[in-house]
Image 1 (tube, chains in turn blue, purple):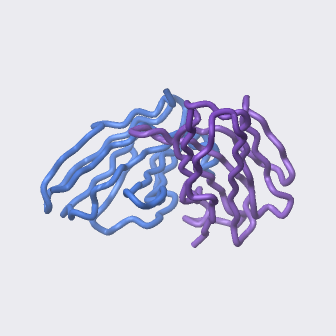
Image 2: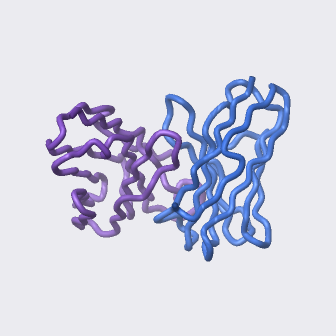
Image 3: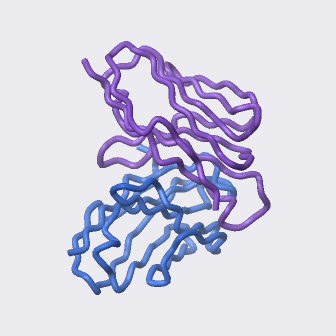
Length: 113
Length: 115
């Protein structure tokens, strides 16, 4: 158990809909990262928050947004969903801002039908 | 953006054999990490490397941070069935700020251990 909790574990939704994925980082970790893992691809970095502030953006679509709350949990919002958004979405956390030794949650498997 | 070339893409080995996989980058990295991912799970950190030339072990796993800072390898000795999974390298580039400083992941090595 990495200590990073993601909910829900599975999500099935229709195209055009909006979903929210939730992540609770390890106790004491200030950094939260979101990654997308599609079937034939590796882990693609989406966005990074540190202590409530956005620190870096990767290949995140404009339809996607995230935030980190004062209690340090984070949410990833995916809207106007398309079939191609079906993927595993992972949250990771680390103590420091630089991303080293990030610990991953078990992921949310999103299926868009 | 940064790219990591991880090889091999997949490996089929007999139980008891040793395994070696590696990652190379076109630019210098200041951190190399190795993760293992099993089906339905998130990646689990195996080994972290922070200095060029560093050689670190974790049980039957050994990883090294290349002298050029552009590569790293992972060895697994005396493989067992529970070693099955996808192994990812990840690196943090040695540049100043922004998204390019985030962990970049290799495409993974799918390891199958045959009894």
